[in-house]
Amino acid sequence: MTFTLPAGHTITGSWNASLTVSGSTVTVRNLGHNGALAPNASTSFGFQASRPNGNTQVPSGYTCA
Figure 1: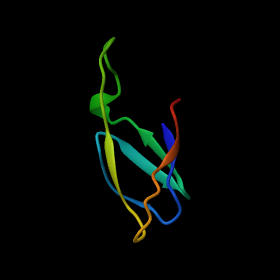
Figure 2 (figure 1 turned 180 degrees about the vertical axis):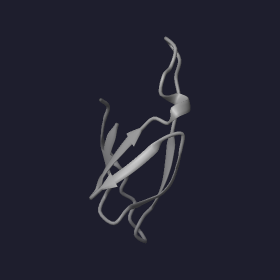
Figure 3 (figure 1 turned 60 degrees about the vertical axis):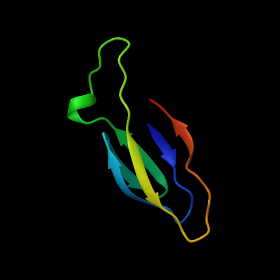
Figure 4 (figure 1 turned 90 degrees about the vertical axis):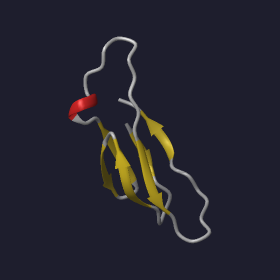
């Protein structure tokens, strides 16, 4: 999965996923324990980001591949 961080935002933490950042593009990949799921199973992940003071923009452009 990929998404775009607004200008000035930075990833400060994540769980249940490996995140890499290139410019403002964040790429999310599974971890070893959640990479192969049974039919109809699901998993979840999350992340934390810091924002410039007063900036309320949220990430956008989520795509899955």
